[in-house]
Image (cartoon, rainbow, N blue to C red; front, side, top):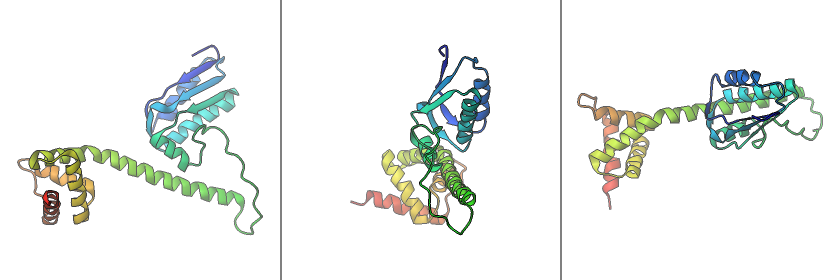
Length: 210
C-alpha cells in the first residue's frame, strides 16, 4: 500500500463469503486511498459469488470516487466473465452501448435485456455446476486409476481410457464407474453390477488387443 494506492492479490476461489470479506477489507482502507488494483492471476475458480465480488468493487469505486482495476484474469474465472458478458481485461469497465436498433413492436427494451441476462446467468450456473461436479469427482477417479494400474499393470493414461470406455459401454457416468471400482477393491466391498463388470472386461480386453 502506497500513500494513495492499494494493491490486492486474491488467491484460490471466489465463492460464498468472498464479497463480505472484500467489503470489510475495503472499509479498513485509509481515506487517502484513491486507487485500488487487484491482480487476479492467483484466482483459479469462482462461481456467481465472484460477480458479487465485482459488485463490491464497483460500489467502492463509486462511493470513494476511486479508480479500481482488476487484471490478469485466466482460466475458469475468465470464462465466467465471458459468459456474463463482461470485459475480460477490465470487467469493471462499463460495456460500450450497442448501436441503436430499429424499434420493434414486441416487448420493451428492458424486458429484452432482462431476458438476455437471465439466459446468460442460466448458462453460467450450469457451467459452474459442471465444474463443481468435475472437481468433486476427481479424487475417486484418481483412486480408481490407481487400483487399475496396480491390478492390471497398466499406465495412468491406459487406466483413464479403461474407465472412460467402461463408462461408454455401460452407459454409466464416469464418476459412478470409478466409485464402483474403488468400492470393489475393499476386502468387504460390493462387486460392480453384472453390466458394469462386463463393460470393464471388454475395456480391458481391448487394451490388450494388438
